[in-house]
Length: 283
Image (cartoon, rainbow, N blue to C red; front, side, top):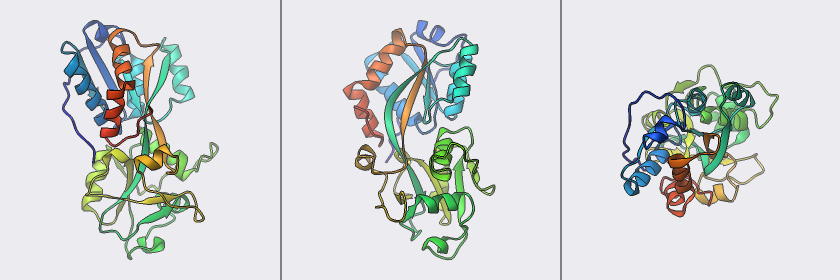
């Protein structure tokens, strides 16, 4: 079950990244909705031991966070996907040098309503479902009824990762897209809420969002392979197929308060928070 923690939010006019915020003993973190609760948990824990520090954490998607880093309106971009080559090139034209940190791991859960009788699916079946080739639950062993597709918006790193690794199966030349009838949801929580009340729905999000109101599907690479659920042990052992790194990006090597916060994230207490929020520690 994901843990939501309170955090201090700051409204301020930002002039440059890693300068104004750091000078004011403040850090602005923006990006991945998958990571926003994790970021807030880190921020709260850090501020408990650093009473003069103020850390703002907001979501909006991985692309939004990376764009904020490039525009100088954040100190740390949270991302559930790797920065793209064109984003790096664009950043350099603005004098921004993105530096990457792998701060955790995540299994991307495929979820349905608990009343759905379907328990497991292969990557091929998932690809066919989310591209619209399979439209009825009875085609994959469920009850006769239409499948309601839920996806994150295109700016989401979760959307990009699922498309590249499930729909396109890692083929960089593929142009396969989600079915045009898929409902694009604004956040992982929006998908979780819809699945909880819609027995026909299927969606995906970081495993930290799984609760008793949704049922995670066991996934196999192919029909001849074993099925695995998105659990900490299965992600650590690389048995669960749909897993990914959780990333920080900073402008150059972090300094001052930003560096101290990043160091905290990699510390034993910081990595324990990763586990507490149902993600997988890197240390």
